[in-house]
Length: 84
Image (cartoon, rainbow, N blue to C red; front, side, top):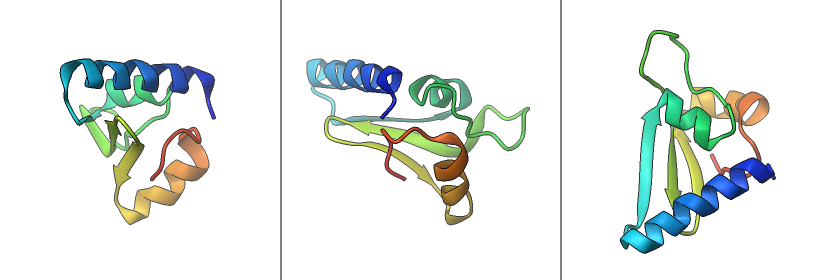
């Protein structure tokens, strides 16, 4: 587990609980990089969104993507804090 990511996930989860919201989801490349401690979801450098998105709930931290990118993200990008 990545300690930086753990702190960020706890911050997100606290905000969710305070707001009475079930989860937050984003494909934005900057937000994806922040939430995952600099993992990249981009294929085209000029795109604002990538091939994967982050979904954080009060219970889980997930990366949603297609089957083609899933293994690459697991192997090359994502900290263990996220399920794919």
